Amino acid sequence: MNIEFAWPWLFAALPLPLLALLLPRAPRQVPAALRFPFYAALRNNLQAPTGQRSRLRLILAGVAWLLLVLAAARPQLIGESVHLPVSGRSLMLAVDISGSMQSEDMQIRGRQLSRLTAVKVVAGDFIDQREGDRVGLILFGDEAYLQAPLTFDRDTVRTLLDEAQIGLAGKQTAIGDAIGLAIKRLRQEPAENRVLILLTDGANTAGNVDPLKAADLAASEGVRIYTIGIGSGETVVQTPFGRRRVASGDLDEATLKAIAEKSGGHYFRARDTAQLAQIYDQLDRIEPVSEDEQSWRPIDELYFWPLGSALLLSVIIALAAAYGGRATAAPRTETKEVSHG
Image (cartoon, rainbow, N blue to C red):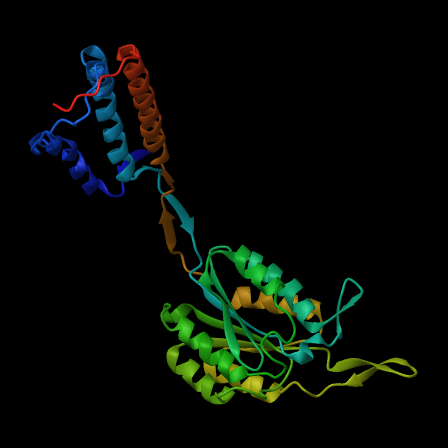
């Protein structure tokens, strides 16, 4: 470990107090018309103490100034380099939060869950396992919104996914817009590591970009898209005779397959959470892992130590000045004399 200064050029301010010696003295004022017999005592009270006390105060003031400049230069404790192996993946998750994602046709541990809740559970575990990968999150409905850019902070990405609500981005499904937004965010990444995982339970019903044209653009940009169709194919509805399962044909599997094929990815069908978890396992095997390493050095700020010491010295100097002034003040007399000379 070693200490470095973030702004070392601020040490150039150290000689500034010496400029006070070069400044001209202020002109003496004409004596006031009112004169008092105890003027000498009053003058002694206002003048700075001399002798050893004055020299000590000057030394303390110099040390305080040095500490202030030291704090302004931002001393930092730089730790040893830490090397972290990374996989090199840049994974963007695009999650459908349209109205149909509230259908309760998914099961986990015997409990009936909505499609979005199931995605949160399984995709959340998938995010947690992405150590070394950069993960981003897009939520889409009527429009697509970037919730989290590509980041190593997986906890934040999972939190944002858990906070997603049905209808937050509208009731319809803009698959093409979600792909277009992902391409925009991934095109700056290395070509071999651009991956989009798109989860939806419906067909493209909104947006300004056609999904197949977006897939062509993804292929030209080197973005591989893995599409995942969510839902069991049946929707549970409430009828006067109880809850019944009704076939649901909203999922446009043909388009999702075409998107995956055009971009060099794969299409998966997830009818339950177990299948969804298996899909993520397959993605781990499909996507290559690079041997790159990232290194970083921990930095601890130390400026508050000299800053606090300077403030403490300032208080000591102020108390010493106040005490010294009282000690050298002469007793005040009660008689007054007014003259006009």
